[in-house]
Image (cartoon, rainbow, N blue to C red; front, side, top):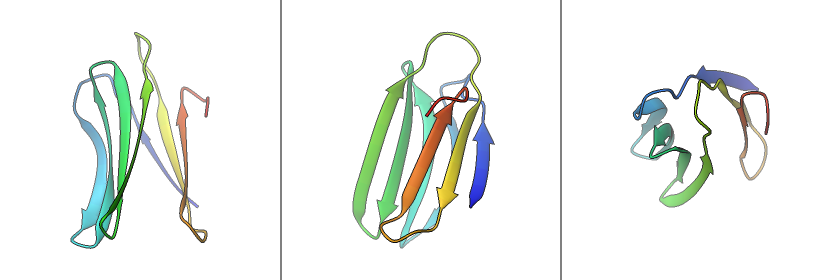
Length: 77
């Protein structure tokens, strides 16, 4: 498992990684936390509302068949 942490208090990209084969991005925009993953051309996206205030966001990367992501916002999945 790998863990990355970000504080999405500004409307900007908080975490990104990838290359021509795929990658992921975590960003805050318009009161929403967005996570997108490019799996060799297949785009997977999810968004969750963010309440006002400061948030600690943790993304756990677990290498399993089918690729699994857990995203925690202020300790809640």
